[in-house]
Length: 453
Image: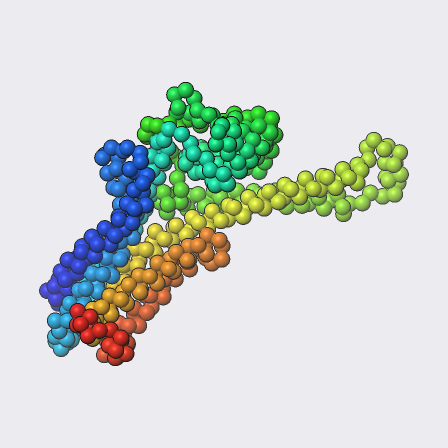
């Protein structure tokens, strides 16, 4: 049996690297088309361009390796079935379950490697790739602001301008979200402003007029500040024509390992509990003024001291302020919960995608065997259908989980559960020599030449 197992595994090696090369090439070409204009227009050196592709190769491999496992399983078992070797093995008393065992154990090894890769190599590569692409993006002599379009060209800043005067540097309706080296974003709003550069062209100066600054105190997240100003000047450095390499401690969820994201969720949970406590305290403070009614004698005594009586308008204003604070805390809680959902999606994704290697073996083995009866074109078409189904579940589930409609676990694992169960069912039916799919109607649609491929 060991000789047979080694033989089956050898049949997978060539198709695996062939599929990996083809799929990786396709994903690289798609990436090249996406960044081609950016790279060409920046006058980058060959070394910098090479770094861009090497760093982005990490996420490409994380996606292409599970796909290559399905391709190799389909091609290997398809070749064995086409040459009647599967029939010979069954005639020698080897059941289908034993034939699937070698690639299944090999896929477990590939999955374990991908789990390590996703938690150690991929986050660091994504982090460096984002910083490098940001540095490349900032390599320009001027800043192009378009009306009513968010500009994200400056690292840490999102700038929205409603009106731009093309003949001067004046702008109107300015909104700036400042996340530069900040845990909580700061919002700056101004009616108008001016844009200019320092003489060396490397520092952007934003002069803002008649505006407000909204921010959360980073030392005490339960405090919220609102500052008004007549004139405010922002200096944003390193916005020049040279490629300046920078460093950043900030990491997105795709730039962190599972452990880092779990630690972050704990911190966010602690902040949510503190915000909920503040909401309860504010609600109790507001209700106590309504429920606690002073006695008549107290009212008569207070009536004589008009200077100490709170007017109805003042009381209403106080409760309006309390309501605004509660609303702010509630919005902050909703934002933090969405962050937690997003983090849990990424945590499960680091394990669900490697687990897809096992799922694709379960599906690819019976599909490859059936390819003899239905033609390689039919088998390849079905494998492509499983690809599309898997990624549709993954992308759709991620979007629904980020919005809180479904759990992160179900979003990331539903495709594995569904396709894995279907693969087990197909293997069981194939082992019992039961026809799972009737190919007669397919032969009427597929041309005879294509069916013989």
